[in-house]
Length: 352
Image 1 (cartoon, helix red, strand yellow):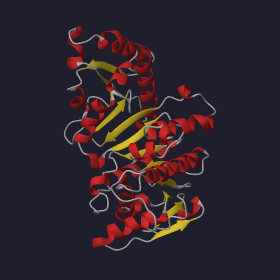
Image 2 (tube, helix red, strand yellow):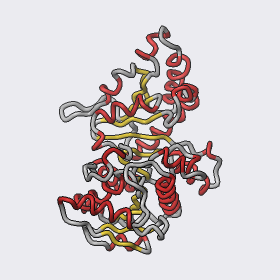
Image 3 (spheres, helix red, strand yellow):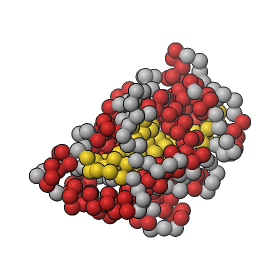
Image 4 (tube, rainbow, N blue to C red):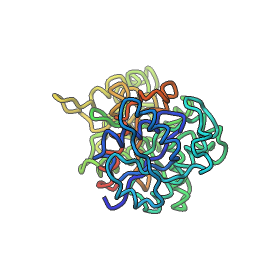
């Protein structure tokens, strides 16, 4: 790779730093040409935690992103973004929500996103944030409920576009299933309000365009209904008849291979790819956050990857949160982060 990949620190009180250390230790082929945007003291603390039963991973500071390309395997290069005054003496307490941790995590995302938008890094892989800590940090970070909205805002500002002109969508993927979400971090009531003809059609368009670049062919999109049994012909709700089906028909008229709406309790099984049976669909469009995330996470959080579709940069993330309950124990599993880095490298070749 000609440009390195930036990995953000995540919430320093959570498991993000530990998974980063384990990824660099256990998957040197995957983490080659990567560096961390964060705080060297936080990562050295994580390295000591992880080294309880293994070798201590060297954590080194770099001054320019290009230096990451020449770092040896199993060496963790860090671009110091958090306040240098920390120096390990005043780090956020592990497992606790704090404004300090939210500020550090948010600052790292902003720095890395702006570097990606300027074309200085090939892609962005984000370790998990804690949304409560982000809110405690105050503005500007408190204005965003998560990574997706923050990155959308930063990209729109960089492109000098109104936010509405840069629609993005969240895709969760593992080896067995891909799911794109119509809405993300909003209440159930707001999610239902977002279920409009225009939003369903737009999501199908974004999904088609992005997956076509990834797969090298037009994707087969299965669309979930929002009501039980996809409304059962209007008995349990008319959103499928009045909103979702017309949007699917409009997408098909544009050459998009979209089918449905199907009963949400079976469509994910129909799309699942196993060793013995290919899925009927390449991706499922889910109507709200938990409808799509539950089946993906049930199949295995350790292999799940979050991809943001529609951004002018490649962004992936592990499919888990900050896990404050095990932060500092060394038990965190780096598998999802490793898969997120691997997928970011693959997407760089697709230019989604």
